[in-house]
Image (tube, rainbow, N blue to C red; front, side):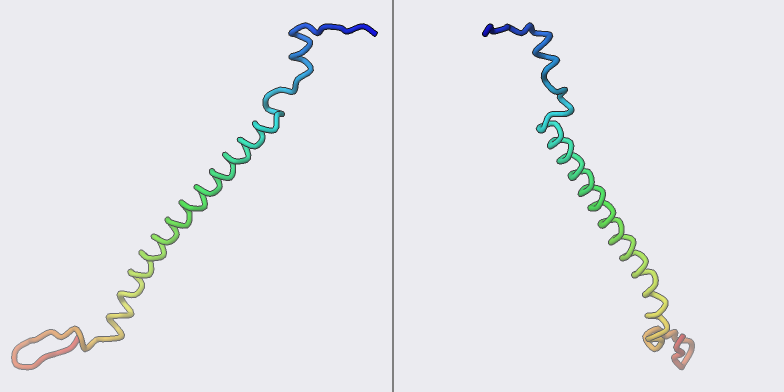
Length: 82
């Protein structure tokens, strides 16, 4: 039985490329999860801002029509409500 020494080129061919190594795949998976979390967070925040903006704009007319006696315009001797 003889022992054969491998050259450097033969050793490098026997190893998997870095993009097939477990540590590289784990790093890529973690980066993907982080990107998804950032996108979901941004969409959540912008959705809340948009919801607050539309809610504040849509509640204004209903408030005016619900409580018209709060808006009184005085002309002359009597008070007139809008």
